[in-house]
Amino acid sequence: MNRLDWIQKELKTLKESGLYNKIRVLGSPQGAWLEVDGKRVLNFCSNNYLGLANHPKMTTAAKAAIEQYGVGPAAVRTIAGTMKLHEELERRVAQFKKSEAAITFQSGFCANLGTIQALVGKDDVIFSDELNHASIIDGCRLSGARIIRYNHCDPVHLEQVIKENEGTYQRAMIISDGVFSMDGDIAPLDKLHEVANAHDILLMVDDAHGEGVLGKGGRGIVDHFNLHGKVDIEIGTFSKAFGVVGGMVSGSAAIVEWLTQRGRPFLFSSAMTPPDVAACITGINILESSTELVDRLWSNAEFFKKEMAAMGFDTGHSQTPITPVMLGEAPLAQQFSRDLFDAGVFAMAIGYPTVPKGKARIRVMISAAHSQTDLEEGLEAFETVGKKLGVI
Image (cartoon, rainbow, N blue to C red; front, side, top):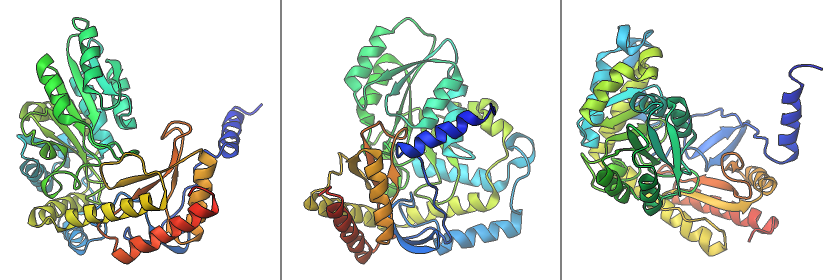
């Protein structure tokens, strides 16, 4: 028996159960419309919330950085990889987020892994929302700390489990997503802060889907709840609303300094590339200059959700531009996605293990790049496919 036979069997099972993910390939920049597998389609599934991924100011800044600094740092930050651009980005992030300090990582995933491991260990405990992102889950596991899950967005249950475990740990940290990427709901950060403050526990929020979306001009969930200086750690990413790549940590100056000494991805992996850093700085410039893109994003999302509900679709309980179209079983969601693609709309099916079994969906990601005509064309395709498959 071949030692890899088990993989083939597992892949066959995924295909038979409708859980196999067919990866489509883009042949164009991100935007409202894409070339996908050689076909021009309306883009309803990227995280390009503000349309910045191909914004001319962003691409110009990236090209200029390449001319000045080259394409990569060729070193980790602590040896020879810290450039003036990195320091400028971190200063601007802290200013934008109204925090004491900030540090950047290669991705939001790395930011979570590096931060959690640096702050808690085997004698500590993490109180984690049961629906937290995979990067938080992996960071918690790698830290060696005991993980205690609390009910989703439930500060009352959080306080209950904290009280039940008092005296059993050295240090503790509460961790929650800010915006939950599959359902689009927002963590009650103000209530989580009250619990953390009452029990003198560190509070960390991963605002990957809140950056550029929540708060004044897209400053994020801490700004949204006016909790500046009260949340110890705010994780963010440049790969979604900013349309680039990279992660950030903002908050306490002491924590940021500690991460420069003990954040493993910071210490052992090469720094963000110069064009990425320059584009991120430009993204902050754009957001600081006007709220136009953020305002348009929310306006587009409100219109789309209203029209989908009027047609009879179940769009869950989203509080953000993330719009889950709930379908139930994975095979139906995958068929719905294929039929949408045939109708000229790119919207991928999401199934287990990304979401629980029986909660498969099409997750629509609305963008400021969409025009009114784009949204109307997308709605028409959803109506046609929804009726064809008996969803509405």
